[in-house]
Length: 220
Length: 102
Image (cartoon, rainbow over all chains, first blue to last red; front, side, top):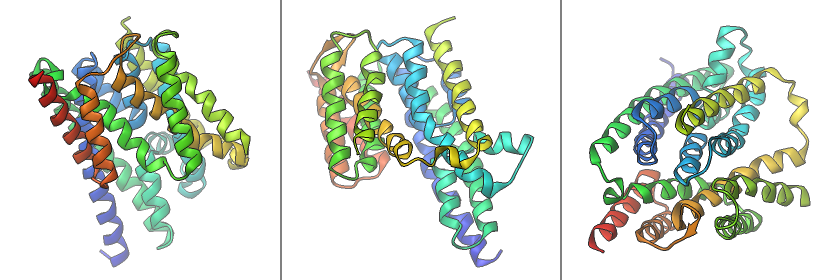
């Protein structure tokens, strides 16, 4: 294996294992929010996008309806579509391979691929496939482990799982807060969601904050 | 069909549709800076709202309980640049301890 390939494999594998391990947090949180082990595993296998999955179970856990959950999760999934736009001309695949490439187009596979691009085109493609499959494998294994673990716990509040979910959201949010506009938006969204919770049906206060993001984004 | 199955299947179908459409549409359609900006901001708004609702509400009521302790510890962990598993675990342990004590 050449040096360039070793770097790509190392990056892909280390990221796959660490990111995949978060799957345990998802599996546990999903069961704590009322989803079955099977449903939790299907979400990881078929949705395969961490933020969207956490959002879907989060909205349902807060008492929201299926439509609110799907809409919130889908808005968080839009960025995967944009990654697809970036990756398609670089991967140049079609047919069944394009279906598979699309399914594993997530933050990590796109990130490693774009990072490896400066080495060469092959490293970029290897990085994408290796990271995509690697995260898929570990994410699903750990989801099952987390879901089974939570099922065995009984009262998940006594194990802190009801705080693990907002903590996970906070950790997903944190690296996205790059400037004062981002922080202003975050605080506005938090206040809006809390003020609207007693007024609007469950789930709507969350999805409605997308409009606040729209206003912030179009302003300048 | 239960709300859980609807959410599971609906989320999965749309998640894949979004990914696949990205691989199938021309790149220049989405290059407008306003679209890029809004796309970066939507996750910030939704994740913030999810943090708030999951921490301080129960059904349609605002409430302060053991979760405040857990989320506060998560915030401190993030300020100290702790990695994701540490953030989630420290929040869970704190929250569980407060829940069991009171």
